[in-house]
Image: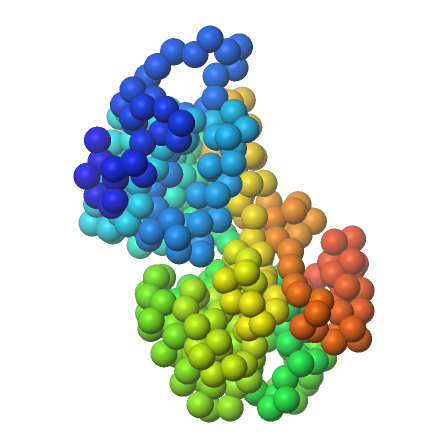
Amino acid sequence: MLKSGRIGRRGFLLGSAGVGLALTMPRAFAQAPLKVAGIHASPVENAWNSRLHAAMVQAAEDGAIEYVFSEGVSGTDYARAMREYAEQGAQLIVGEAYAVETEARQVAADYPDTMFLMGSSGEPAGDNFGTFGTWNHEAAYLAGMLAGKMSETGTFGAVGAIPIPEVNMLINGFRAGVDSVRPDAKHLIGFIGTFFDPPKAREAGLAQIDAGADILFGERIGTADAAKERGIKAIGSLTDYTERYPQTVFANAMWYFRPILEAAVADTRAATGTGKNYTPYSMMQEGGNDIVFDESMVPAEAVAAMEERRAAIKSGEFEVVIDFSEPT
């Protein structure tokens, strides 16, 4: 039984007894649910982890998988957690290799019959180590188009975690969307140096507001707290923050993990291996990302232009440029 993270009820199978029992009990169904383990470096309330967690919870409720998970697993414990779930019989292990790229690949090599699906900036490895990136840059671009028409100061802030390719791409996508409708825009970029520190993200947002920003793009949770505190508008990322921040968050660059999960589950069932890059399932054409927004908070003319571009992205007529360079 894993001891890292907050185990308790969170370390148990959803709707069943415990990890060890759940991963070994026989099933009467013709096709038993796939045994999937999630290993989260941050709490599942963290925006990115919440998207993985929600997709796997829903898949479990649909009967497609059995899902166990651990959260708050440190980098020093991560490889051990992967090994323990593999030893317990998980058929597919889902997690994040950003802080443990080398170690995670070694674990996968040691357990060739277990499939792995990891958020990663690196490449797949072998037949069983699949990777994926969080590509909601298209939705961020569309949110930027709305923001560009709403700002009074023409200065836009963006708060990110760490300048890894996926984070850079997202902020660059937002900036490109703003610039497409407001070429004279000024951009303020800040990184908090960690994936989960809402107070630090709030402080970074406040600093950008003090420097003139009147719209904030929150790649990290906590950014909208600064916007709410100062009475300006904000954009959320990955998940929908509108209900949590009414009259503050007017748009969200959503990311949906379910298409990636379904593809990996299908490959695991078919015994074709998960050693591939699943990132393309994040694209808008695959249902992997999209924008949600509050029309009552956005000018009608901004919505019309954005919807036209949104349709062009979905049809393949327009491609949002992928820019992994660190935004400055």
